[in-house]
Amino acid sequence: MVILYEVHNNIYVNLTNKCPCACTFCLRQNRDEMNGSGSLWLEREPSLDEVKAEFCKRVMDKYDEVVFCGFGEPTERLDVMLGAAEFVKEKYGKTVRVNTNGLGDLINGKDTAPLYEGKVDIVSISLNTPNPKRYLELTKSRFGIESHAAMLKFAKNVKQYVKQVVLTTVGTTLTRDEEEECRKICDSIGVTYRIRPFE
Image 1 (spheres, rainbow, N blue to C red):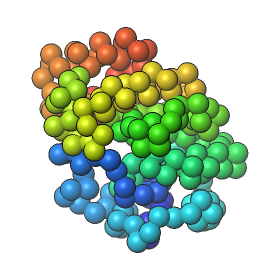
Image 2: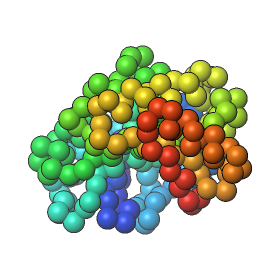
Image 3: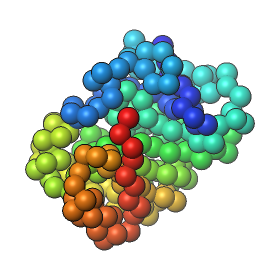
Image 4: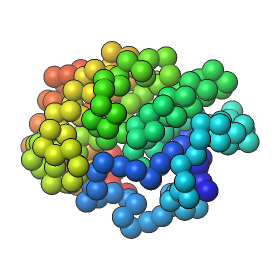
């Protein structure tokens, strides 16, 4: 069962296969691994102790970042994610990044942003599109049309507690005008906009 896997100079953490979305462009729709990781479909969800034990098997000096991003939405396991992040910060002093759809507040039924303080350095959120209706078409979020607004609210809130918040879209999926709209949204809430390459 693959809990940790390497991509470039970073170590990624695969905590769950649960996700409230079924994005039309999700990588897991046409593959079961990343970068030769072995299958990221979990037999069961690992405990916090199991995650810590996997870190202890690694030579952590060679990694730049620890990234919570696997074949599921990491905030589906919020307590384990934050516990592992805290462990990584205390034991290894590594930069911790969370790649998320930004719907953790809806998933957990509470304001999660303050919980990131001191544990997470970077939060990267999939913005996908500036349009709420198009967002729902693309992500098929089980939370419906309110998902887009909830994601932006989380982005605005979490920037108070972490060093960097990045909202991303995928290159070639939006028009130039739509990308400019995304840039304006990011500027309005004071976060970074990044167009990531299509994989």
